[in-house]
Length: 98
Image (cartoon, rainbow, N blue to C red; front, side, top):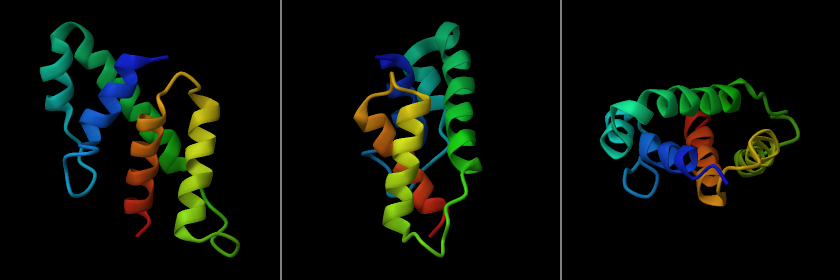
């Protein structure tokens, strides 16, 4: 499991702490330092960019089913992510499309 990337996604987004998704690179750097932080921030942004590039079929999907679809897609693309990190990405995606 990609524990560091999973944790970085949660920290970056503020999942579990913030009322809505954030872009908190400082939280990642504070947790992982200046050696690992920049790479994890870059990788976190890549995962979120992949999620943001997905286009649900809004004629066939609700916001909830689209979130679930995105979570499945991200889990397929990044099988090493924890379930919590995948949920964080789904949370951010559903917020973007509110």
